[in-house]
Length: 450
Image (cartoon, rainbow, N blue to C red; front, side, top):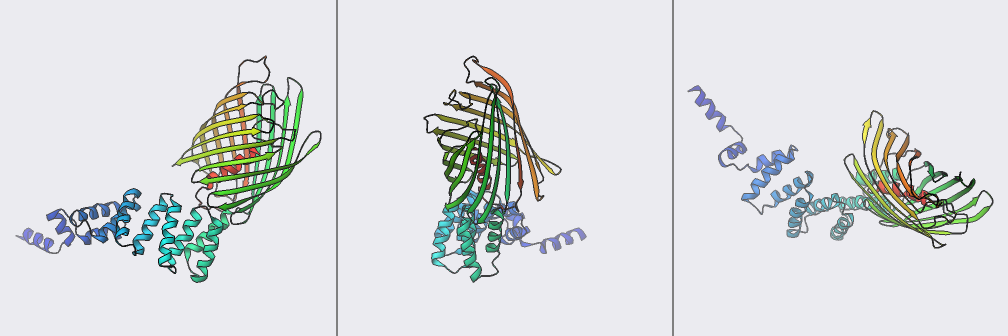
């Protein structure tokens, strides 16, 4: 009898959600709401989906299901639900801004910006919409425009945290001082190439970077007992034109071990979208990342396509370079790499694999280059803890190289080739910027190409 009374009391005082769940299998709205507010996203999504089986057109259920799909990484389904709601009520700013964020989380920043501007045309003084526009403009790769928008927003809403955070990220991304050093030994067919480049860059305002570069390269041919030296110093600026587009201009002086050759202008136009970038560059007296040592008044035109894909600790990179010299010679490069990161105390250890193919139509014309070269290597990279003000980076590539040499007495040669790249930079404060990795990679490529 006592047990029966206790059971009756328990049933009478149980939450309605539990009663409904036990007898009908459908959770109550209160139960779904409690899961939502408690941050139990997966369970809440299951509950709202069950409720939608009964009320498929319930506005609140659809909205919260859309939110939960987005929060659990199901962006496509979230966009479908939110788009359906927004079509029913285009004046609902909560649904509209949520839909915009879901679209931006899929890296479709321009589409999200267009939707934001449409909503702003209806509610031009809405603080949340204006803050969202500032954030999206920054993510879309327009720091200068985002900075101006943030200033205007802070004039009207001095305590807006989004505008303050965006301006802080812009200041951090300008890199008050970045110093990079490269050393590239190269050994093939009795010819040794030693290249050293120093590169100093500073952001002077959002979207504008000033840099100074000095490069020196020495080629020694032990078979012919010939050697050649070239050097170059230059001053340049890198300016963002609009979203995704950058212009770089550089002017310097080049020379060899015998004389000063003259002015060495260089320019490039760069398109960056996500983790893919394309560059078209033109330079006079170029010192490239290949053993081409130009001692005549030649021009080099190059097109570059670079791609980067990263997921978790794994990263895949690829690039294609096609170059044309003004003496009708050309060069080609195709490379790819795969690497993964591992933390070792205060160090980041990144092993990987690299494959590369190069060809030079200028072989035998005094360029110290083989007709073609192919090599595969194992990459070992160690980087000091990035949380420190200074960090060092050492990359060592060791692998098997095959090439067709300049001298006809060698038909086919295989040898082991070791290449090292040493980098030392003054690290700026961290800033999360879409496309920042590819921008850094392209800076390094341009540095070695031109």
